[in-house]
Image (cartoon, rainbow, N blue to C red; front, side, top):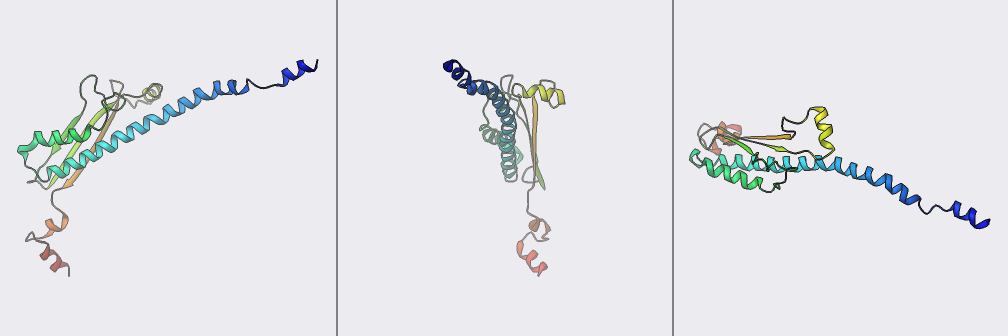
Length: 168
């Protein structure tokens, strides 16, 4: 009788049962944290590419338009061509708009793309209406920059000495 009660008091299978409940919950939490990380990575790379494009536009003429876009696309190539990072299976979704060159007072670069949401996350995004008609998340960054610094634009002669002399 002593052996029967000892077997009933053992809890050797308890960890297995707890793991069966905990592991799926842990995986869902990781999945929910993964999507914002992917979007943040994409936005960071896109933002850096847009600012580098602005710096390039301030020093080039309008004739180099195709070269400027290729330069920006090379910066964007650090984003993997997986649909969860950048929809590429149905054709490249990069939209790059450049405005201005070295002869204008301001330049801007706008970059847009689509990201396919992860499973389970897409259900919540569809319910919130945060996806487009293709079921993808749309990302957009805009970078604007003046072609000349403020001190150069304020100078009547175009030299920094006249600005320094006027401010003293």
